[in-house]
Amino acid sequence: MDGTLVDTEHQWLDTVAGFLREQGLAATDEVLADFAGAPVDDAARRLVRGYGVRCDVTGTAARLDRDFTAHVTAGVTVQPGALRLLDRARALGVPAALVTASERHVADLVLRALGAHRFALSVTSGEAPGKPHPDPYLAAAAGLGVDPADCLAVEDTPTGAAAALAAGCRLLAVPSVPGIPAGPRTAVVASLEDVDLADFPFARPA
Image 1 (spheres, one colour):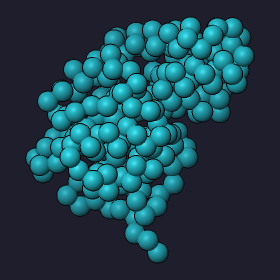
Image 2 (cartoon, helix red, strand yellow; image 1 turned 30 degrees about the vertical axis):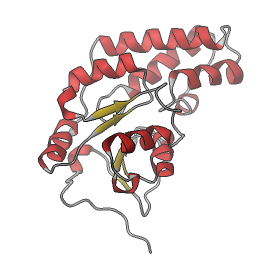
Image 3 (cartoon, one colour; image 1 turned 135 degrees about the vertical axis):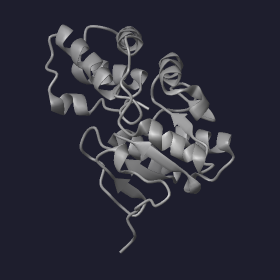
């Protein structure tokens, strides 16, 4: 969801950056890349244990969630090609599931913006162990009643990509940060506008 269907990955990283700066810490691109695709609770643990912020994990998570939710409530930008991709999937009879590291209340805001009718189900943070664990994708595949190997995951971060591949899905990567290589089960594109689901260019094993 964040960074693939809507441009909320930047809002999330802005949230982390703002928190770091308030704590008197640097918010460089290198530092922020480590938080791309991370669930709120995981990010809070990293901030407390790795950066020595002046809050406990619970307080840090609550602050991140509050600020990120405020960003999303103010409005989201749908990524180029996202609605066309979802509508093309429906036309081909391919059900879609939303799998996100965001909390349920954030996902519901985005679902309203995208059109909840475009999704058969959604799996959010706290409903399965978070990415990079494969569980969110395994839960989505089980909910759809399909084999994960028959699923195409769409991701923008190495964290999400690792979850999808570990679950056995094929992967369409539209990177928002570096670190997702092309491979036999991974196709990397610059934009969802470049994707035709009826003729998908997966890399083949050598």
